[in-house]
Image: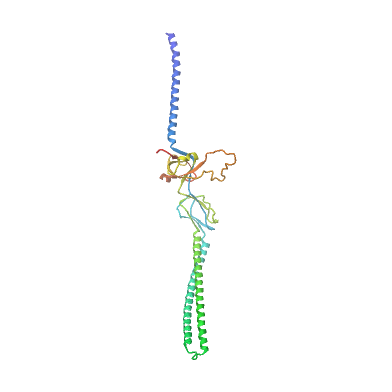
Length: 343
C-alpha cells in the first residue's frame, strides 16, 4: 500500500501545473480577444469620424482705440466686465471739441445771415432792372414821338436829348442786368459758404462724438491698460474687447478633406470643460493651407524638398445652447470629431 501511494503522488503533482497553465492560456486568449474586439468596435465607430486635436476656440477680438487725441476723463468699464454694443467705455475731455463746435455753429449762423443779405441784394438788383426797363421804354417812346413830329417843329437839341436819353436808359438797363448777375453769383457764393459751414458743424459734432469711445460689439473687456488722466493718441490701443460670438478653427490633414464638407455635424470636446461634448456644424473650409499664409512660406524649389502632409483650417460653428453655461474663451484647446458618414 505504501508503494502504491508513492506512485500516485507524483502523478497528481504533474496534473496541477498543467491545469494552471491551461487556465492562464485561456485567460490570456480571452484578454487578447477582448482587446481585438474592442479595437474592432473602436475602428468601426472611428471610421465614421474625421478627428483633429489641432484645434482651438476662436472669436472676434476688437482693439479699442481713440480716433482723436485727448486726455482721458473717465474709464467707464473694468477688466473682464461684460458690455453691450454701443455702451460707453472711455470718455475723453471734450473741452476743445466743444469750443470747435461752438465756433463752427457761429460761422454757420454768419453764413446764413450772408445768404439773407445776398438775397436782398438780388431783389434790389432785379428791382433796378425793372426801373431801368421802364426808363428805357419811356425814352424809346419819347424818341419815337420826336421822330414822327415835323422836323421844323422841334429843335435839333431836343432830338439829340431824346437820343441820348434812350442810350442812357439802355446803358442803365444793361448795368442793372449786370448787377443782377453779380448778385446771383454772390448769393451762390454765400450758399456755398453756408454749406461749407454746415459741413464744418457736422464734422465738429463728429469730433465731439469721438470723445466718447463706445463698444463696437457685445463682449468682455480684456487687457485694459488705459487709466484716467492718460494722454492718448489716435490709434493707440486702450483695451481689447472679446466678442460673445465664438467658433472653432480646426486644422485637418489635407488627406482628410475629401470627406469633409460644410453642413456636416461635429462633436467638440473642450479641454477647459471636462466631461460634456458640444454639438457643432462645419461652416466653411479655408481655400489654402496654413503654410501658405505663414510669415515665411515654405520654398519648395530649393532642391531639398521633403513632402509633408499639410493642414487646412476648417471653421465650425457651435449649435449647442449649453455653451452659455461654461466659461469658454478664444484660445482654448479643443478636440474635434466630424461625422463624415453614418448617422
